[in-house]
Image: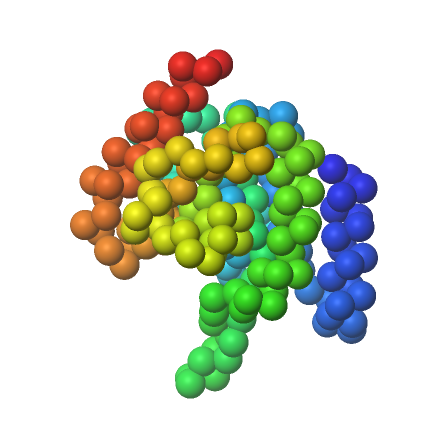
Length: 189
Ligand code: URA
């Protein structure tokens, strides 16, 4: 994993010469049975150097607890490892979704990271990691809460925890999906 990180750092420095992108690497148990994959770090994640520690992360932690899943026993990472930003009309630096090009650059690294952890189940959070791994036709609205195949491992799509902030009516669906994941895992451990 250390080598992976060093090589990824060098790759990003080569592509974004002179920009000194802050990278937020995955964290957690490197032999975890479940790997959670988000979109890209936001402001808090970049400041703290850890994935899912901002508002979306608080939602995620809350629901993991409901399902009896211990975050420290999982591995949590993102598709794109730096914060995609733009300047808002008010002149502030704000988040933006990662571009297809950014996703394409990071995808081989994400696949390598999955190989290193080798989880029983890869959980994609939102459309970005789902489409990156399962193809552009996959959509979260249809695929969430179902177990798909990813090269022999299970792929379990869930909504992004940030979507609960904008759409609280998703909370029941989110709860049901994460409870199903917890049950699935307990049967296999
Ligand atoms: N959203 C993500 O997709 N990843 C993070 O790490 C934080 C917020």
